[in-house]
Length: 431
Image (cartoon, rainbow, N blue to C red; front, top):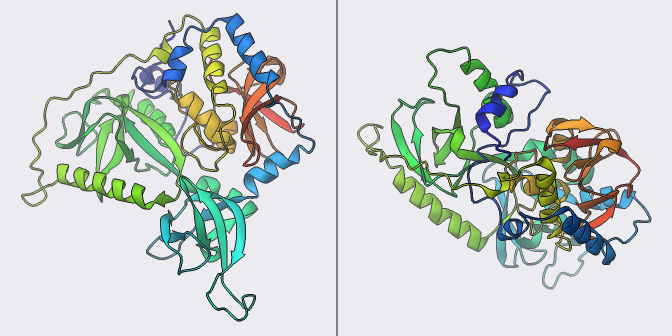
């Protein structure tokens, strides 16, 4: 049985120093359950012959259409990219149902929200005598679950947006146990501030300005030299508005996402959840918490995704799981396998099997697993494409084929690994 453990992996990565160019793949708390969908669970016992049939039947469908101009994948994927940017408060703009302020508000686009541009339009003003005379430009875009129009002044697009994509990566800690205490300091003996529960997600407070997974690896290395250390690794989270504390890294998973626009319904739901969290974290007595810490419930449901006798079985399960999503749409910055972009697809497939890898193509190329040659590629490896840097990734499924989120027009499909000639690397995440 292959069991991945955060502690052992952190120790094996302890040679990494925070802030260096090196990066590490850390399957965070993959003992914990709830990460595999029903679809993945149904494929856990997939045999080699079943996998071959699955790939063959998928290839037989109309999802292997030839790409006559390989550059169209890169161009359509990122030249339609937009990122909202605001220098002053409030750091959001309204998304409207049409190109003008008289149209209804359908959502908000916050600082760093990414989206895909659908079209551009001049402002639509009723009874406008000269619509071409210095009217504001509006961008028609799709971001997250929201589609609508924003003023062009609020977004950067195309190459400029792509070059700034990684600057707007957000890290979240998702709780994997029934109940987990948040402590004032990074110590098991520190006072409890509140508690968090399974499935809740919290912003990770960056330490030393680096990927929190790199920070954890560096902290583990330091802890090995500290005899008084409590033997645990900790991550700082914002557990309520303006309030921070520490949770044990052994009972969370760290995810990496892009921000997207939020619909009015999503905003209302998040505000309600925030009020509940703030109420839970209410303090009194001059800042001293009135919270009485209950016994922690650290029960972790077994994760079926790690129950494999060989890495070959694990690889087959990953490929079978990934192929279930063929035909799904492409959405830049999408946060689930129902609709996402190229690096989101590979990131979330691996996440559902307990692996934490970068959310961006360049991050996966630089830090996911180890580099192998194309001749050594196995099902479940990541194929990296680009010119002068990685700008597209796909999942290798064997037999010279990949499954990938191509672009907004094509969606998730199966292609030849040579659908583009600019392969710059292959990353083995699994072994």
